[in-house]
Length: 224
Image (cartoon, rainbow, N blue to C red):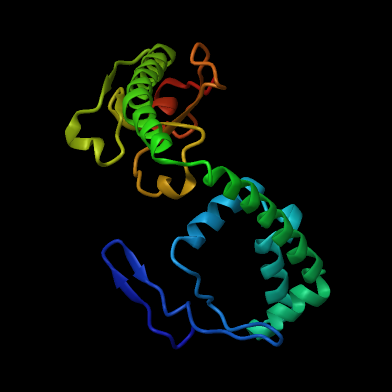
């Protein structure tokens, strides 16, 4: 084992320092420092553009695993050379950057159209319409799950809403979210998530309930 000390806590452990400053030949020092808000914009643009998807930059999991096999004692500089020289890294990064900047350019044009009146419409749409409509869809999803499994369902009380619980299917707490729910927010939800997809049509709701392990196993049901 490494001589680095790992500090364990009640809910996990504290990793050794991983954000150390790293350098590679011909590149600037990492980690990079970005102006405020820019990484949030770039992260969103990247999600839309798919600029760092495996078909563009390669599967990082597989590439790092291959690098570790070929260079078991390799450092950051070795990794950069491996990716750039053996995996056509420059071409991949060039394409990734172009895809990302193209999406940023389109987002910038849209952003320039945002004024105070649009902000007001956005807030009204989110607070008034989507909140009310979302609650109705949650209720429909829970009722459908009750019919599917032949169990009672109920809305969650306010006391547990902050934990991400929207309702109960039998005795199992669940969170009801659209399939478009951001990945980075799912970590804050500790109960099974039931996803729904309206496909732009609130008269048709597809329900994905694969995380409902307790209810599914007790009744032998499956997602439909």
